[in-house]
Image (cartoon, rainbow, N blue to C red; front, side):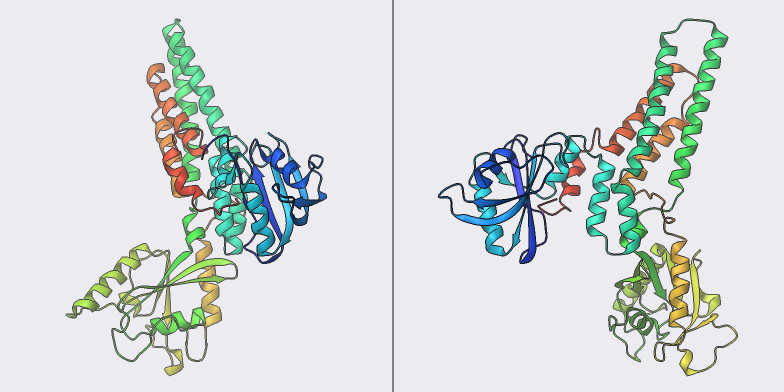
Length: 427
């Protein structure tokens, strides 16, 4: 990001469309608007104007134009939005007109949001929420992203940080204070106790379900011996031929991932090789990958004998191929047939119920890996606060730094390019 430039980009979908939105942000945004529209609309008021090319005055379009002055704008800078007709030629002509003006350039991916972060309009957790919102494909993902983008975690982190700042002030004051030894010891003990209370609160947040299963999908691994009907079940649940099905044992050699949304719950269904001893080198590799998938699974659908089931905390035993006959006494409690559809609806409900156990509760903020890592650092530092004020001040400084990295105040430049690379040009 180059400070001082005025950036512009198409912020709506790729043309053709009924309406296209082109936005610009920076110190030359208002001057560019005057050059193209001939006048500036009142602040925060849409006005219908005629857009013309600055060189030659050729008509571009009639459009609604809105203007937002810094710092009360989405980016914290002067912002102009042009709502024009969404034809390719119209959009290209407007973008070319903006590019012809001094100090104007096309925005980089995510640069509007990055400027909002740099200008204090949002913090890093809200930027991560916006990235998740753009990528959301299910209702659950959308709701979780809105909580994060709406500043829910930002407010919580600021509360934690302020408490750490207050404790740090007490520690620094104790370092400078020369008084009764018993009084100093009592103050240090009270400070350490307050730090431990905050550490316990952070620990409760770390114990919550994480954001990754919600974002990537609850990983549901279909496992069992060869020819148990795993691939047929995957195809039936996905309602498409995603996995090869034959009567030959060992057909599936690699893990096949099928993303699904069941009643708004994101699911990543994984078909695996049949579990058995094999002298076939390729099949043995497939079996090894199947075993690795079992270790990664959030939920296992087991199609084998119950006494051979893997020790997984979330396992659903299934009697597959139920159309071929009644289940044996040792078979799974849920009869399912990929041929007739028997039990598929009930199985879907079982999957949803089990998946909700590993997903964040509705309306509850969930931490991603980066956020959890910073909170864990702060938690460990706070848990290590001792009555000695010098040692306590150092531990509290570590906690405050972790909170600053969490919110993007400091020490996050190395990950910003990767984050904002997930955004489109106009975001």
